[in-house]
Amino acid sequence: MASPGASMRRSSRQRWLTAASWLIAAACVGNVFPIYWMAATSLKSEADIHTYPPKFIFPITLDNYAQLFGQANFLQPFENSLAVAVGSTVGSVVLGSMAAYALGRFKVGGRLFPMWILAMRMFPPIVLALPIFFLISGAGLLNSRLALTAVYLMLNLPFVIWLMRGFFMEIPLALEEAAWIDGCSRWQAMVQVVLPLARPGLAVTSIFVFIASWNEFLLAAVLTGPETRTAPVAAAQFSGEYGILWGPMMAAGTVIVLPMLAAAMLVQRYIVRGLALGAVKG
Amino acid sequence: MNVREAHPPVAEAGRAARPRAWARGRWSGERLFPYVMVAPATLILLLFTIYPTLFNLNASLRDVTVYNFTSGAHRFIGTRNYEALGRSAEFWGATGATLLYVVASVGFGFLIAFGLALALQHTPGLRALVSPFLLVPLMATPAVVALAWNQMLVSELGVVNYLLGLVGLPAPPWLGTAPWPLVTVVLIDVWQHVPFMFFVLLAGLTVLPDEPFEAAAIDGAGTWDSFRYLTLPLLQPVILVTLIFRTMNAFTSFDVIYVLTGGAPGTGTEILNLFLYRKAFKGFEFGQAGAVAVAMVLITGLIGLVLIRLMSREDAERD
Image: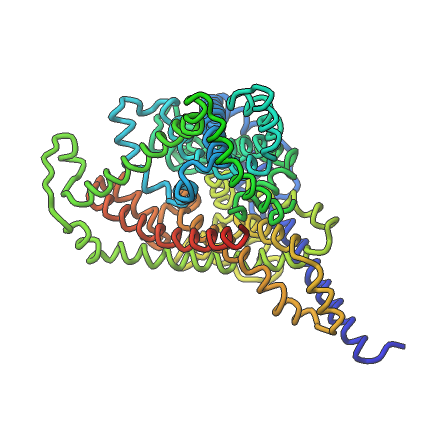
């Protein structure tokens, strides 16, 4: 038999374990429930949505999706979101990686430049909203996808530079030096030697900025009009004459979120890595 | 993932690179190369740094509104916008709400995230099982998150209050009377950002060295002691960075509150971001909006400065 002390220690350890498992189980369920509930609501008939107590088992209908893509023409905002997110991701990853490479390898701008980039990541975008609104309207580009793409490109740049700088600095310099000795120019060495090695980093970064652009709401709400509004803005405007149209609205939310979640699950290992790097790496 | 060890070779490479790269420059083009690479990004960032700063500063010193904006008939009025702001109960209300919101959601979220990270620290299998669940709030569109929660919290029909009723808990007016809406937006922010802090803290925990913990165990230290005297001090830099990043991030909150409450009830959930939005895009008081923007840049700048100091101190220690 164990001594009383040891058994007490074991029972308190067991209590800890039970508490921890409950915490973990609650975290798992709690994290997905709102999204699950949104998707479930999007598949309910209008009558089922307005029933109390809420129904967990119900006949599935696609009426809300039919209304969303038919009457409400949600394909247009969806397409706008896609175009803006793709454009700003490509632009910011190309320009940001170029800058990141120079910062990581050649220490351009010393310590100050990286600090400026870090500071840029910190400011609330609302501070930029009014000046950018007048800048864009002065250029006659209000309500255009192009303007929103450019603004997102700018918003993404600091993050791309920050993350890619870290990835580039991990690649041994000796590899490029060998290429230089073989007669490659700086540019050739970067494109042919460094970029292939940086591919995982480029993937992580692209995923992050794509999701950030896809999810952005504030500046999209300020800078777009009826034809150019993005999917989140359109979803939030989903109310009819008699109040909120829950069915189509939940369908819109599901259409916006599910593709991103599916993509995130496929590359979750990279996302977790990117999160840790983006925040922790100095 | 090895966050710490990735650093030393990097620093060496950087130091070695400069003299060789410069000495080799046969063509002046090679010397210009790094500057050409940085130029496009720098120009874009400069445009979006300098223009908004000048715009906000200039507007904050003028009596500019939507009526005289295009005509340019606004006058220079010195610091009157700032003085008006200082007297405005709404501004101080928004500042107070912001502080409450940020402190509550960062503090509460940190406790949960740290607890989870500690619980999963030594169980890689369980961690792999839980991670995908935790990615969901993190990746979900904030505006859509607000819509989803709105559906679940609708007073008469909401599933949240139904579930609370099942276990015998009272049904609070989540989106009704003050202070509940503020509690609600804090809880949603916690829900959405616990995963971020969890992943960063976990990354920090998994790279802690084993030796001190083994030595402490041999010396008979209990779980609490080794947490208090080893985990906390060793993890301190990561904890600080996590907290400050999250704090800065909480200061930028807009979408969820805007979509869910729009600042209501009254101005009960109107944090500074929403206050500025209202001044700029609903009241069209551009001068006042400029003053708020300048104030917010100063506040975030101050916090950012602390972060930068902490991070560069860590950098210097590593070099």
